[in-house]
Length: 331
Image (cartoon, rainbow, N blue to C red; front, side, top):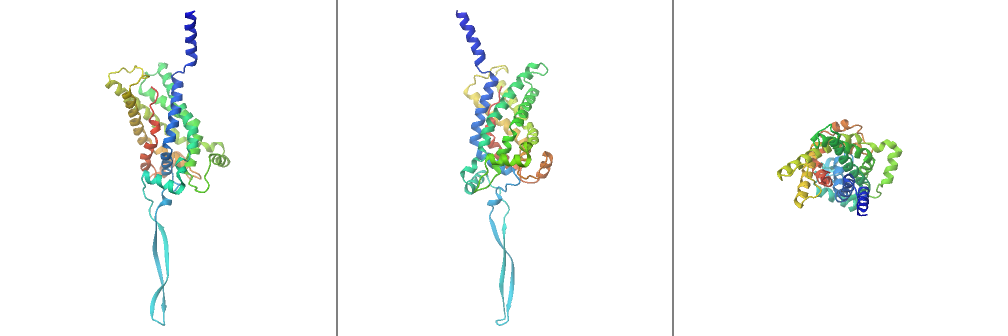
């Protein structure tokens, strides 16, 4: 009787308790959602700085009246020359390089506090499946590659292939959501705000279903950032384990308080390095998604963006807004 109960318990546990892949799926979704809400204002600033058509900052630049010409008329009765007409031209000074606080302040003053959360709806809709698909695909790809016997288990090459597979899957399935989010964040209308449904209708009417996949090539090139992120992360994690005298096969399910912060630091460091190296693809992706964009391909966009505003000035904002990506990847 006792043996039968034990067998039944094992069967129930086997079928109803989540495996590691399901745990990573839910953990990625929950963490990504929380990060999306907290970093949405930073995402809005970053997207507008990356764009070439939003005029973010230009519309707030001071204007200077310049006296350009004066015409004169002669009075024969008095014999004096007096100015009769002045031509004044209003010139806008060079766009100021505003800091993060000034950019946020400009948005609030000119568009209201709600503008800081433009694109949050699509972001919340997309971040959960995006992170869930990514973390699940990464853990499953890593497991399959480790068990295949064709590649040395837990080698850098395994991490590269697993990260590439996860990034490709996530980008392909969720690109339409991020495309809509970018369009909403670039919208600077004050009186009438663009809604997600209006944006979807306009895109489909003008470009069809393939219009939702603008910028997908830049996302694929951006897989290099994801791959570099996880490779550096895994190497840092190995160094931490060796420094603590722990085996690479030790289970990470039970982590101490300090190990939690160590892995957070490893994730932040690896993400910072990857973002700085591969950042230009984000600028290209944003510009490919602009409405009425003159940018047609990834490499053409990079070439046209050379020497213009784009990469350098918003990398710091990107690092702040990517804090939700510092979540520890699956082991």
